[in-house]
Length: 248
Length: 267
Image (tube, rainbow over all chains, first blue to last red; front, side):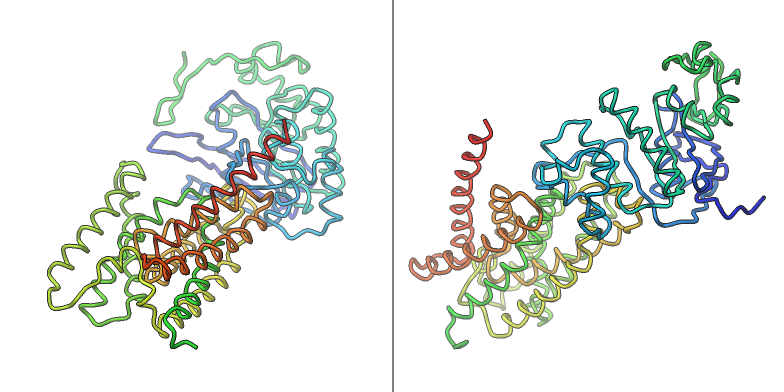
């Protein structure tokens, strides 16, 4: 093993099961400084689970996780704020770290929501809320960013801008990014390494390698290998509760 | 000055309100009102234990409530019964067992009504010390775990991922809940302690736009409830607990008018 100093987090044959049903199994991957690793795969393929293993949210896991940083920013797939909790955007920015006003404003400006600073989180639209989540995650200038579908609900032009921003953040802060995305087009253009999941690692490698891979084609359809095509997938196999793979 | 029972009751109530304010906000945010009820119901068992063993009441209530909280956590792991059923099971069985034990303790004269609904005549200088010192300890501890507790209240996974150790904060908070019940039992009574936690906080929610302002208003609401409630209790010779909670309810109803206005403004 090339004990690379740039490694931020590394999964060794990691898996997680609930009630003897595997959510994901046998995942090995690593995220390095300045690199974007993207997880793709159909619904229920274990993308979010893999991210939570990497973050240490799931502790009783198979295999192992090596984490080399504690400065982590996270955008979960779903957050719901209860009405009973009055929370403004500004309060949310201060949730996990004591930040000065300048840093808060900087992060909110980067994601284009500085005008919402004193609004209640409950009053934001889905897209605005995602931008606030992303701002919170980047505000403390983390070493590792884990983004679980960070642009869901964001309008089309905003989506492109936010992906550009993510790329820019990765370059400027030299931080590693573990990204979960549904948008293959963006994945292919902005990613250093792609891991294609379907309960296990189907295939992985550079975007071009993955696009040519037969398993990837089988999972996402022939068209997807022509990169620009949009998301479409067919299941050629199913998973038993024991984690075995059965061909259809 | 402390010779006057009313001054003692007032000071005790003020001490309690300073602590129930912030804790009550978390009870509402984390949906713990039934959990608070369960701990409070089990307090009767703690009181009987204190009488039989000639032990300090607040301390034994604290111990029993903490044990009940631990049992709850174990039950949650071992059965598939839903949380509210488990809480009901513990709340009512511990209250029942407590009342049965009281029946056996015929050699002690018990003021059951005072225990259930609070008794301002019963507050001693010793109780005052327990409330103020215990209350200060609770608030200092809460300040210490505020960030991880609050972050995990907003989103557990975010708090965990960004390295805040929410599990420890949650465990400490459970102990704080047992502690506030232990120190406020004489004032409010065990059936109404949860009301003291949630009603001022609910009132505060109607009036506030940030977590900090909600905590402060919740304390203010609690203080007003205690002062209004105790004066009525003195005037009309009613139990202190129900008087305080009724005052809190009136404040809550007043706060609804403010919220109606702000909804109108929005439209």
